[in-house]
Length: 381
Image (tube, rainbow, N blue to C red; front, side, top):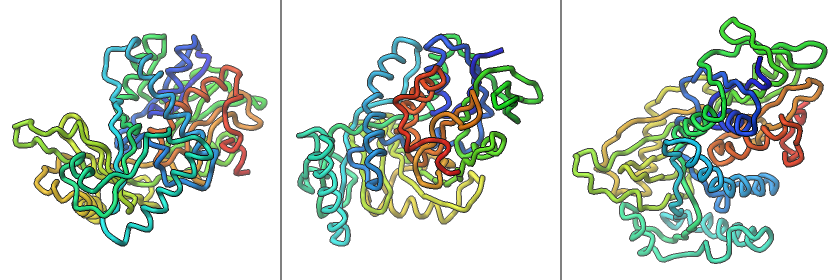
């Protein structure tokens, strides 16, 4: 018997399981490693200060807290396991490529300055408009842009590396990880009793559903609505060192964000991740499409034509768990003792996931005070 079973081994589930194990809770992580898991494909941009999301101040405050948590988490993981957690500060360039994007650029600057005056984020002095020449010097493949701004506190994270580091560290604290399919949640008299995984029942007093885009079915079992749908994202990974000369200094470049909801994320190994599509209504189909690849590459070369000679290393596809109101779903399930949910992060799973996992782990242990009520599980009923 385990005290808690966590269903789903993406960034959110791995974080929940790690934090529980670190706090001495006997925990089992059940993970079937679905193809198309968002964690394995995500670009990993950590920059809420420059986010275009304006509909929820609570989301922005939560995202800021989530990214602020990263340094402490990464420091802890450095002591608790041997692998690279894949986190690095790198800065972010916002650019208007042509006159048609200048209005959007000005609106973004105004939004960021408003947040700075009302919420003190971004930090004073960390964000400023720069010259097009300076932007090009920071990211050499960039097109000739009309306007540019630089945010120095942005960071990036490799989701696959971070999730693996969380599981390794969790294992060092006593976490058990099992490759299996969680088929059914057992309840009796309004309380969790166990989880059926690959036909075998695991007794437990609490369960955390962190199944990403696949979470909805567990809501049906718990009598609560979890309106989470998969949103397909295709991301091209370009290799600047494919000829073997390893001369690229891409690891020193910033992230680039333009105004067609796409981005470029450089990595120290000479890769640049270019993404991403946002495809709804495609179901659980984690495959590339001709139209999706064309969209990603066209936008990449519009923003950075200097990448035209880069080799296409791979196209990654992830199914983002998008909730009905585009906000995370976190916390206890009303009316079912011991049942918790951590899903619905959409395209911001890597940004919010580790912190979400920490707070849900605290809730499982009896302290839900830091979970935003706006993200509660019962809000859709």
